[in-house]
Length: 130
Image 1 (cartoon, rainbow, N blue to C red):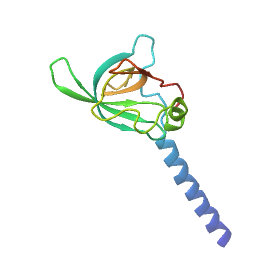
Image 2: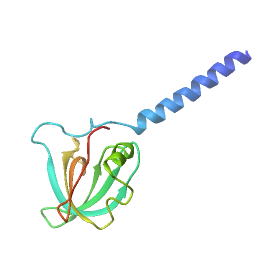
Image 3: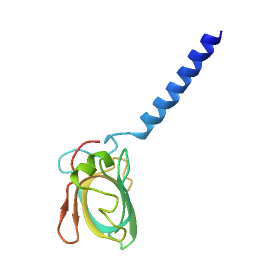
Image 4: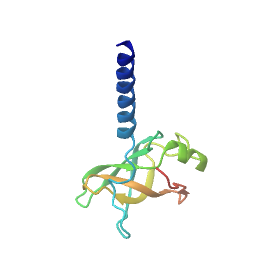
């Protein structure tokens, strides 16, 4: 009986751990990937999150009507960006940048970033990976 209880507890812990990791990483399936579907936006950084599994830039742009829109721009992981010279302060709040990437398939203001150019013309190495 004691052996069965230990097995059930071990199974429960394993399922909880697996569910958390599966939910935490979703890959790029939520974003368009067809050739020609990339968009380019120019705006102001609200916040940069240098984290795993995906680093994120919260970014504000003005739409065609002059209204402010906040976009969530997703990059590869902190672990993939750091070897390319990235750090938590690579992109500063209120910095003007231009971002190119694949928009979310569901039409939300989100994109998978493929290119970033700073106001001074310097391009940041984004790289691949998840």
